[in-house]
Amino acid sequence: MIIFKKVVALHQFITSLKQQNKTIGFVPTMGALHQGHLSLIDACKKACDVTVCSIFVNPTQFNDPKDFEKYPITLEQDMLLLTQHEMDILFLPSVNEIYPAGVHTLPHYNLGALENILEGKYRPGHFQGVCQVVDRLLNIVQPDKLFLGRKDYQQCMVINKLIELKQLPIALSIQPTLREEDGLAMSSRNMRLTAAGRKKAVVLYRTLLFIKENAFKKGIPVLIEEAKAKLLASGFEKIDYITVADANTLQEIKALGASANAVVLAAAFLDGVRLIDNLSLSA
Ligand code: PAF
Image 1 (cartoon, rainbow, N blue to C red):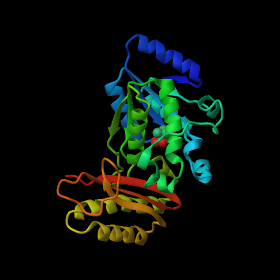
Image 2 (cartoon, protein in one colour):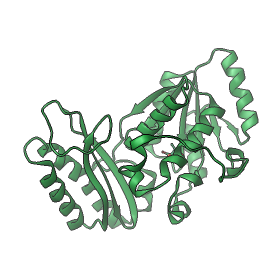
Image 3 (cartoon, rainbow, N blue to C red):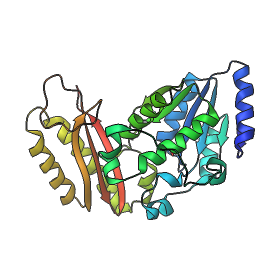
Image 4 (cartoon, rainbow, N blue to C red):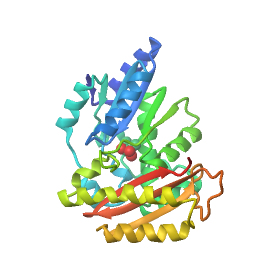
């Protein structure tokens, strides 16, 4: 594995790979790697000649400074996992490398309705931050293919929109959510749960399953209220949202037609840790 910390050096190296007609695949991460990240890397390695992974905890996407401070950093372990996974290139930039002119004059992206609903409503500015860093990373890495996990459903849609806005020649590959044995979606944030919290956390997934199983039998608003009650009864402290939405627009749906392409999405706090998950409601 070759490690690059400087933009110029990585950019030059990638340019030489492109001159040899190598296809470049990219897996951007904020570190604290788990099997979910490794599955993205495996998909990337299968599809591309060269795989680049970045680890950069992007300050501009954290609307809550405490969340940024508490974001888990496990760099040594991450590097070991990447080496074992025969990663080709690891990009490990500093904040200065990514934002050489500081963070106050960064571009603004017109994300339309996507920006202020669901995650955007509860994490104002989050998706602008995601676009700022992903735009910069894509510019440096120049990948042919970009790999993202479906667990961050809205983020996938936002990055798709970024690719459209910038008319980038990049194919986005969205990979399925990887789950622990009990069903909890894998996430770097799970490592901040207490042992008791970790046992309860699966209720988020089970609640989404409950909605999926009943979505065509009961009214959506009633189901959502029952789901919220289940989460609170099992120890979740706060629910930002549980919503059934159109899978293509993320606009809320109150009743499902037989041909609906819908997704149920949720964000809730347990042990002070904000967990998100989603499930497709189509057959
Ligand atoms: O999903 C993440 O880990 C981050 O939001 C990303 C895409 C690496 C941008 O910082």
